Every structure is written in structure tokens, then in C-alpha cells.
Length: 247
Image (cartoon, rainbow, N blue to C red; front, side, top):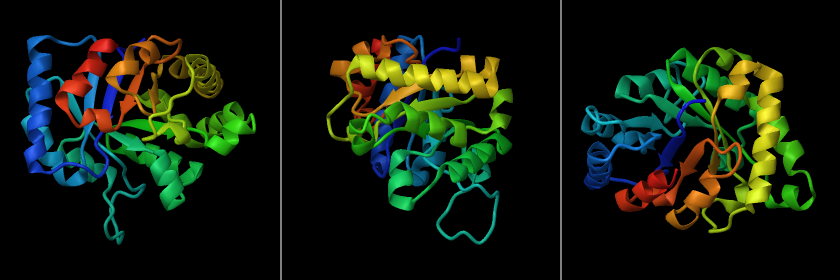
């Protein structure tokens, strides 16, 4: 199995002055290397500058989203090729905020994952249920359906990750029980293996949703949890480093 992946999603946060946090993280990992892969996904305005700042470090840089087309009349959008050109190595696709606020469906997410593959980027494909779906007992069914629809067959030939993000846990401070996390991750693994065989057995499954230093060790120690997709706690080097050290 690959090393765990701990990826920080800065979302719509960060200005040039905040690159100091990325440099501090890189310096700490240079002094005491982690047994994980580490990535930061800043807003597009910072991506090239962060890639330059971290070029000699062990910290990978990623994008937060990409368009499925390589170029065209798509005002305000960024293609996977543009992200790669700016220094990205990974890209998040299908984040619940994109699905909810922009109406992205599984087919669009799969198209973006293929675009990442086309550009040589490693996609982190997000799935997760709403609170209503969980309360209705449909969490496993919903997540398995999203995996089947969002993970294209072509990804079996390259590195990728799936991130389980219960929508109701993102930014709320709430997290599922460890048993609930393990049940969903097991369902994701079964679905990946059914779809992709050996490649589906290798891909890391990250947990995302209010991961913080206080709960990171317990979450990262759960069965089939191969890393974390971290939001607010990744904005400060000290907090993010504590999560990385917990893996």
C-alpha cells in the first residue's frame, strides 16, 4: 500500500503573506521527515507561488478543482493543464461544496478526474452523504453510488485517491463515530475493487470532515483510512503538522 496522504485544502483562504505557513510546514518536515505524503491545495491565485516556495521540499502542491476541458470559452475556470503548468501535482475533484453549491454530478466529477489524468495530475475524488441521507440509513448506498459514478475506469492505470467527506461534518466540528467511518471506508474499498480490481485495492481512501489535531490519531488509525483531507486545520503550519505527525 502507498504511504498515507495528508492533503490540506485551503479553500477560498490565503494571500501572499500566508505562504509563510507553507514554508514553515516544509521546514519542519525537512528537519523531521514524516512517514506520509503531504500536500497543500491553495487557491489558484497562490498555486504557482506556493509551488515555487516549496519546490525543494517534500510538500506537494495541488489544485482545488479543474474544468474537464483543456481550454476554451469558460470564463473564470481553470483547466487541469493550467494547474500542472503552475506547478500542481494533484487536484481535488467533486468536493461536496462543488457538488452542493454548483450542482456538480457524478458524471462531471468523473470527467474532471479524467482531465486530471490527461494533464498528469493525481486526482483526489470526493464522495459523501448528507445528514438526511445518513439519517435515512442510506449513507453506504449513496457513497457506493458516487464512487461508481465518479471514479472512471481509466484511473486504474495511475495514482489516485478517494476522499470520504460526510457533508454534514465539513466545517461543523462534528465527526462520525470511528465505527461509522470504518463502515463507509469498507464500502468504498469494496466498490473500488469491484470496479478496478488491484488498482482499487491500492488507492488510498482519505477521511475528510472536521479533522483536527485532537481527533487525527484516532481517525487515521481506523481501518481503511489511508490519510486525510484537511480543511481549516491546514491553514496553520502547527495544526497541520500535528495532524501529519498523528498518521
